[in-house]
Image (cartoon, rainbow, N blue to C red; front, side, top):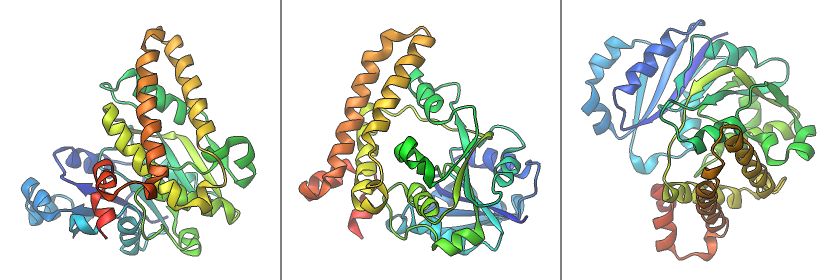
Amino acid sequence: MKIDVIIPIYKPDEGLFTLLDRLLEQSVPIHRIILMNTGREYFDALIKENEFAHRYPKAEVHHLDKRDFDHGGTRREAVGYSDAQAFVMMTQDAMPADRHLLERLVEALDGKVAAAYARQLPDAASSVFEKASRHFNYPEASRVKTLEDLEGMGVKAFFCSNVCAAYRRDIYDELGGFVRRAIFNEDMIYAAGALQAGYGIAYEAQARVIHSHNYSNLQQLRRNFDLGVSQARHPEVFGLAASESEGMRFVKGTWSYLVEKGQPHRFPGFCVQCAFKYAGYLLGKHYESLPRFLVLHLTTNREYWQK
């Protein structure tokens, strides 16, 4: 199966070279690596394009202005450059944990599976809260989720992450691709449509990437504001199941994780972080009631609101 890898990049650093090198060392060959770069000046500051093309002949770079970036639309445009039977979406800060990442992901695209997403592991510098989050959202057991799981799993049934996820192109085209405009959650919106069309979404725990962030409380609030906006703007998806119940499961799961790690004293700090997350989420869900200046102050993607 021909495989392309698609990566939106912004202000790349030397870590981009490490990522590309690890992708080219994968156990299955890559046809092309399609980079959607926001801000040509940042790319040129890292490396001259002709030098980059010589170093990575399988990579192609498409430049766009910051005002034109969109979580759904940019990825949708990138897929248009691909002619592979399967494409893998990644972010520039996700690092393959071994040589078998792509092999395991593509193997999971079996039968009526529309997409398969990887297990995300925390890096060594991750906080205990970030490690708890990865432990909760990315368990050790693989599974395939279908619409029948909606009642038992709630919103987690159509959880999928474009930090690292593989897609079958024939099903992608049949479903109409990623939403054209999305401030966030373009992966979950697509996954929900796939489930409703009778397809499955696979979580492949043996496909592993290293990816985590130590966000501050304010960063968590702003990130969750965009998450709330995406849910408010797509009630046809997020109206299928409430997110709040999943949040409570996460709180309970984190408490158990902290006790297991001998750090229950960290739980109050986690509760403060949750308060910032929930405040951002609620503000985002009710963004239409907020003045525009506050929306622009809270969002992480001002360009989305200026289109």
